[in-house]
Length: 489
Image (tube, rainbow, N blue to C red; front, side, top):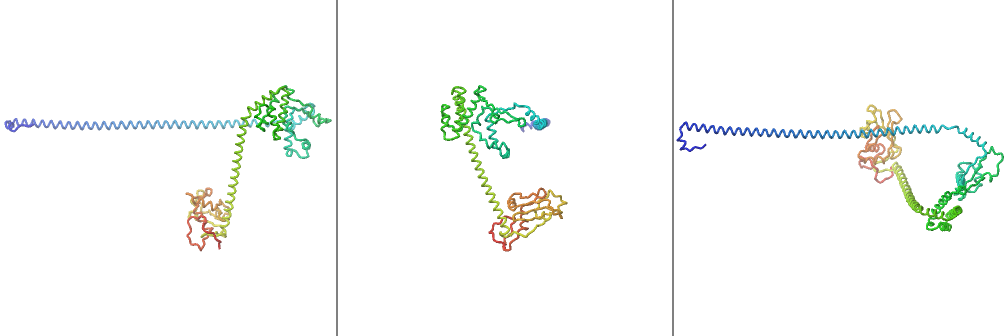
């Protein structure tokens, strides 16, 4: 509150005092208002900070709850997946059990079936009964086709050396009889009736011509059906067209047969003659050539796809044969290479025992070398001993011998025993190949594990001696000699 000086001088002391007090009260009120405003601002800031803290706390609780929900959902999904795996495993186990039970039931049923099958009557009693019946009966006969007789005749001629001695009566009859003809092999419509006479029941043997062939019946004539001869003609015509495919270009069956008869191959002419005879029989039975022509047209319609398939199979067969020949040639080449490698390896091993290579010469007169388990562990040859207990390692000895150059025998013995616990033969080329691996080791059937490089150094020290005329330091890794080979002194 600003009061001019001249006006202030006109006020009395009491008025001045009153104005000063009023001004003090006003300033006090302003200060109090400022303090209250600051306190309100502090309270408002504290409230805002508390609200912000509460918001962060609520957000954290919400995120935590969401994470828990996600983890719970994940646990539920994992549990459902586990239940599904258990269900699948249970189904698989049930299927296996069911399969095993089914196999067991099938085995039991099969055993019962085989047991029932084996429970038969005595063969000799049944044979005696049949012989007795055969002696009593006088009208026993069989009906057999000429093609079946010819087939049986052909099989007997083929296997007579295996089923009968040369002095057998059947063998004598087969030598006297001529071979069955092609006409008999294809005569399926002719049936022969053979009467069977027991040798003990027959008092006199009739003439063979009247006893063997008593009745000859033509199946076509007796049945009155042309289906049998049609099937036979179709079979013969298919065989002819396979042998002479150029006959398919003919329009009529007679023209095709005449073309086949003029073929240069004798087999084709024979087949054509046989087919022509059967077509003549079909013509005599039906009274017309329509049946033969329809048969020829039907075979022509069905034959090309079969012929194309046959040609395709023939090409595939030729390709497979060529591949097989190539594989055989390659196998022969590989075998020659293997034999040559073996000869080379044998020659190199033999030469190592006689020749000098660089600073090393093979010691021919060196015998067996013995080492204890502790010595080999100290030199680093033995890496591990999983199969030997620690209390027994002191009683184990290792024998190294070299019967031939490049071939070494490592044997494990107990002290005082000549029988080996374990023995292994190793070759020098195998050790040289193993030493270039990242972990070159030799496993002795679970007893010990040897270091390949340290083993090579040990074998080098035992079975190779250093030449005094060569001053090159010995390499840490023993390798094949590469210097010029000279005669050892």
